[in-house]
Length: 253
Image 1: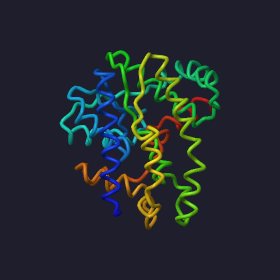
Image 2: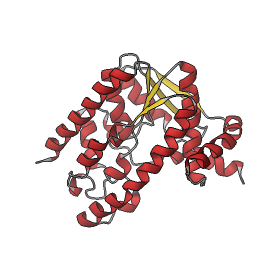
Image 3: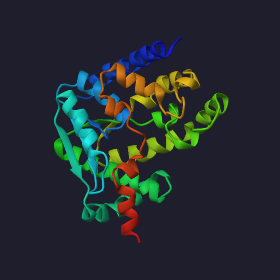
Image 4: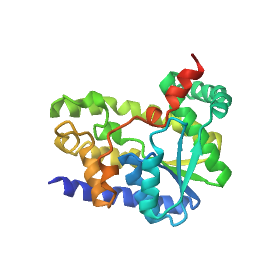
């Protein structure tokens, strides 16, 4: 099978999950950073939910806002931008730390940064009356988005991705703890069991090629009509692209 055959399978799996999501929640939001993973899943949200909230966030040092705005405009949707102020971050950190400790996630700077961002955007979503949030978590591991995967041969890449699946469980625990605090249900299409199993059948050369990460996701996004600027946007970790980690480091300096 070529890459487009695999993309067709991926589309079927994700579409089936959205059909199920429709049965359990109507007032839905989606987290959009403007990266390929969240932008792609936002196209599905926009298709299945006419009145979904498209939510994005960042500090005054964010790199995400222009990309998120471009995706929202491309889809003809309004972007709900959540500005993460120093005051909010300082006020939120102790609560976030307790929530992480409760679910057994280490309170490293990275985890605190990620959790704080999610906590504050879920807070905003709750105020809007959102009952469920769709995320784009997963492809950084499933489709070789991290820098550490570069330079690996196909066999090494496949083996490392399988080893890293455990990290996705930490992501789910962290994000679920933040969402549960506000009574919000999380939908993670890329982390559904059948999608994870499918991703492991996708050949390594469709994940990482010529130093370009997440080739599969980019080609999938192209097929969904996303702008080339979004498709070709280099990977930037959420905690850095939002400016959150830098802000938290500054506050603890």
